[in-house]
Image (tube, rainbow, N blue to C red; front, side):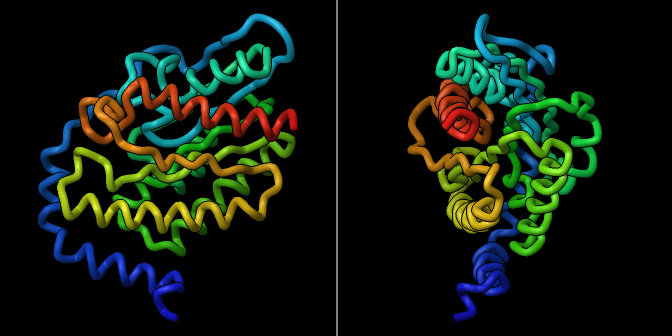
Length: 245
């Protein structure tokens, strides 16, 4: 059936989204815009044991939007979990940019990373591809190009991709736009899962959480520090299992 093909799912999305374009433009015009988290783009946690070198690369989640400092954002919380669970020292590096799509991460951010020795890589991407209205084929191709580039540069590293978040819960998005973007995020996440199945060193970290009061930062779009801690534990578990199991 057409609905099960990439063009069919694109057609489904556009049939739902087209009437909502005026609403989407209003949201884009009025949305709150927070700054990246404060602090250095590198850090260390833990005091003993094996050293795990962690690179976090991607969009505003890696930049820590919604957190006071990077140590309270995804990279810092992932490192904290790893340090405690693995009884290790974790040296982390963050390279994130607000609004970055998968292609921009590969072509613009990745060349900025100087350290060529990482044991684990955490990637956050996809939401900007959704709101940029990319098709599913382009999304898969761009995500695959990013994954290939990471695999070639760090062939020994484990790679964890954060799943697409449940955009149907984002307070910043009014209904029915919220529901339609939620559907699109699920479509993107399904393709990401399928892609990662072909890479033994890669894993998918699902972010399908129940939205509760306090789950989001003040902009209604990015996680709160509490949610960053939860996501960091999820990512840390994924990385730890790939490295040690």
